Image 1 (tube, rainbow, N blue to C red):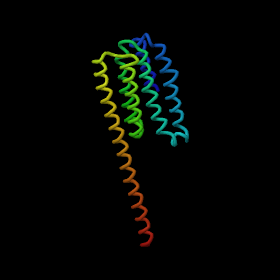
Image 2: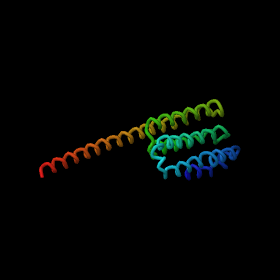
Image 3: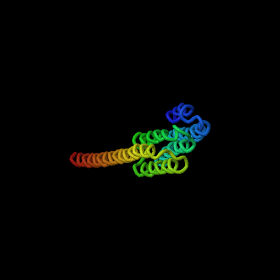
Image 4: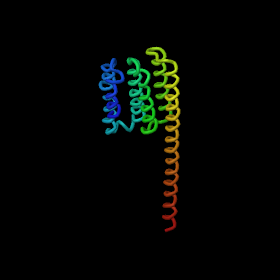
Length: 178
């Protein structure tokens, strides 16, 4: 939430014509959602809803930037996509969201950006090609990172479960030998 809010400092110089709507999106929608999730993370309910809630945080953060892009003039509408790269990187590698959820959310963010950049508030084709190259690369890398983290967690679980079972068997054999 602090990182997302701090990028609001750029709004006045990069998207002055949309500064009001950007502030509303950033501080009245996205940041309260993120702060609510932080508060929720200290409750027992979080354990049961963590995957959904964390994926929702990634989605709301990304769609907030897409919405700002939809309202911005140049240069903001062409360069705010960089915030989407940060959302994808953070959501797919620093936050423990399962890779299938990351895939779905990152795809929704990417598709929403395409709609805005091609139809709602079009940007020049060469700029779109450039932005898509970097954004799609971050989506692919993020999905890959998320998959590898999940795979590692599963392997560690299997290893630990095997060690637990072996320890129990060893204890049972020791008790029988005594």
